[in-house]
Image 1 (cartoon, rainbow, N blue to C red):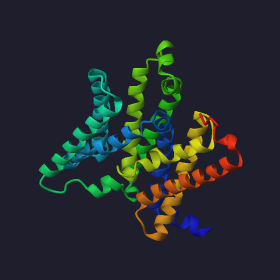
Image 2: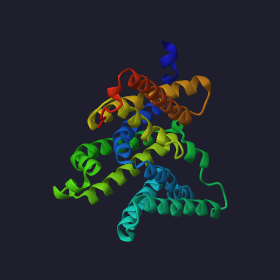
Image 3: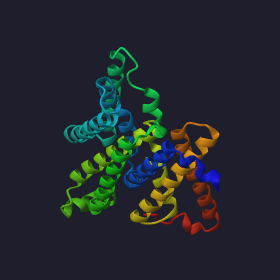
Image 4: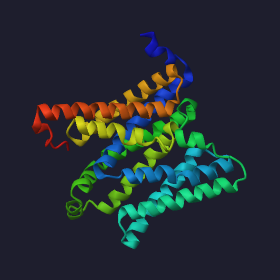
Length: 282
């Protein structure tokens, strides 16, 4: 039993667990909509599109999460505007913003004349380096994100399954879409501090995708995904402590393994009970 709790007696590990758990809950709620609406590409583009803000913040000596947030908002706004004005598909608009933001970030980093931005931390996170201020920011972001998901549940649901009906009912689907993109940006910015941009899908996509295989109903998916995310963070930190591996990468690896195990189990169940295969999980 001591093996399971001893690492978390150390202050920076316990802060990592708290920050990671809060982030997991935020990503579970917002990631549910990402999975159901097929916004994974936007989440990926957003995670890399934060580089300009992070680079500028590092050069100016300001908070990196603030810089990442500014970049995320700019990119979200750009996707909505370009898609609406040009008439191009959502994926094309996202891809263009992705290219511009990532390229701009690389230019800023190269022009700074030094490795001002800790690219390793940016790409893979530094959950064990999370401080008290970071925990407070993550807690506030999680509270705001969860409340937003609750308040916007109806328009988000209508937008996900029947945009035309949402428009007919006066739910303003375009505004709801923009709000959803901003929430994805929020989750990505918070996750970046914990697991980095390359591994953000481990929290944003992994637990919700696993929950979709297990339960019905959007609310249940969010709850199960939150539990899975917290377990993923705890197990990942525990394994990384004893195996002396990168904490962020280990956390996301655990999430991937959980998904594969659940998927394998569901595949077996589908063979035993064929009706499960056609079961509507939403």
